[in-house]
Image 1 (cartoon, helix red, strand yellow):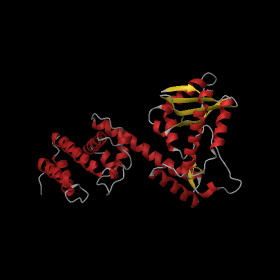
Image 2 (cartoon, rainbow, N blue to C red):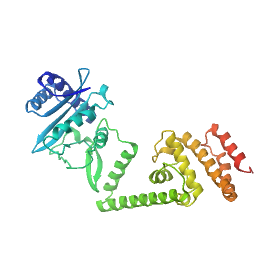
Image 3 (tube, one colour):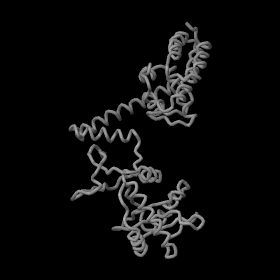
Image 4 (cartoon, helix red, strand yellow):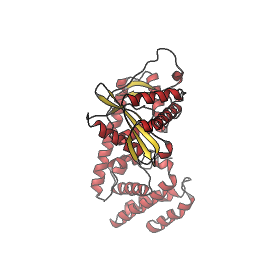
Length: 345
C-alpha cells in the first residue's frame, strides 16, 4: 500500500472516491445523494484550493482517501473513506496517521465531526485517540423537511437532545432500549436533575460493587486474570431464572467467589466477553463452565475439610437434574459430580 498526496494525475480517482463516500453516507441516512457532477465539482474545488488530500493506493488502484481542511487556523478532517473491498487492512489508520504527520508541520491538534449514528466511525476515531468532545453541533429546521420523519432521544449530561434516525443504523438492543426509555422518561416529565440522580446512584452502586469484588479477590488469594469489574458484571448478568445466591452472599463466601472466578475464566477461555447478556446468549457454554467451576469449588472445600459446605452444595447439585434448561449431554457430568463429592439421597 502507498499513501500519496493528491496530484492532478489522480484527481479522477479522488473524484470517484468522493462520489462513493457520499453515496454510502446518504444510503445510511436514507437520503438521496446529489448528482455525481456536483460531487465531482466539489472534489475539484477542494483540490484546487489546496486542501490536504491523501490517497491510499493498493497496487496502483485507489483504495481510499482523507481530506483535511484549514479553517480559522485549525485543521479539520472533512472526510475519510476506504472502499468496502479494502476495509480491515489498516488503510484508514494509515491515512489518518499520514494526515496527522502533515498537520503537525503547522499545528498540534486535528479536529473532526462525527455523526452520532455512525457507531463504526465513532469506534474507529476513539481507537485512534480522538476521545475529547470539543463542540456540539446543533440544527433547527426552519421549515418541515423529509428528515423530520423520525428521531432518537439522546442526552448529554442530562440535557435532552434528538438525533435523526438512519436507515443503516447499527445500534445494539441495549442502546435502542436506552433511547426508548430516555424518550419515555422525558415524555413523562423527567428532568435533568432526576436523570443525573438516577445515573449517579447506579454508578455509585457499580463502583461500590467493584470495590467489594476487589476485596473478595484479595481475600481468597487465588491467581487469576479476572478483574473486579468482570466479577461484578458477571454477578449481575441476566439469567433465565432467579439466582440461588445474591451478589452480596457470593462475595462474603470464599467458596462461591472461587466458583464465580473459575466460571468466568472458563467462559473467557472460550472467547466470550463478560457482558450483561453473556449467560442468556451462551447457555450451553455457561452450563459447562458452571459445572467445571463447581468441581473447583468442591475440591477447595474438600481440601479444607468443610463437609458442611459440601453437603449444602450437593443439595444444590441434585436440583440441577430437575432443571429443564440443563443440556441433556451435561446430565452425566452432574451425576459424576454427585458420585464424586456427594452422598446421593
